[in-house]
Image (cartoon, rainbow, N blue to C red; front, side, top):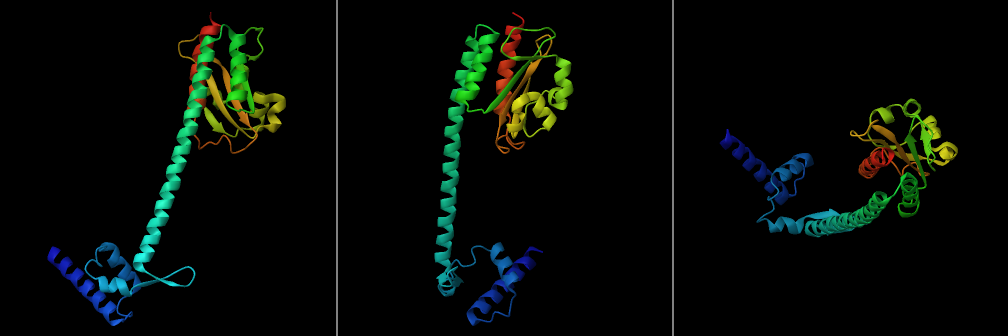
Length: 248
């Protein structure tokens, strides 16, 4: 079987050689030639005279040699790689800035003496350090609390937000208008996309502590396809600090 395949390949190669040498383009179909060359990328090794005769049409209508076209393609590919590398470098810088802002926020949260200071730290940092246009922090409590933050009963929030709360997972993207109205109240009409993190801690009693929502006017700022690492991490840290503050 192997010998037969080799023999067939030799016949194809001979036919191509004869076709190119004679200029008879009707001997093989272009598709057959293309398939063969894909299977044998080293076909032109040792056949420099064929390379010298090959011409490719240029976009401007001029004819260029195969080698020139290959060089041009390699340059285009190298340029694309440089652009990709620049994009990765830019992302790395942005991630480094985000990490530093997050580090400072967490340190400030840990240093908060009480819930009132904690709420103030969150608001200032989200607005000024992270550039978040809208944010809503809702804490759960069965009794009134004298805090500069919104307090709601757990069942009220669960009923209003449904699966957002029951899943216990952070989300990014767009939500219903009713959910926007509940989270952002009078600012809801300006919010185009959101990132939401349910605040809960397994070692707390009760486990559900509240919900944190970030909003943007841009409908594409927070997208369902983007990761939730930032909002999830902030939610985890905030949940643990809140559990300590609420039950101290």
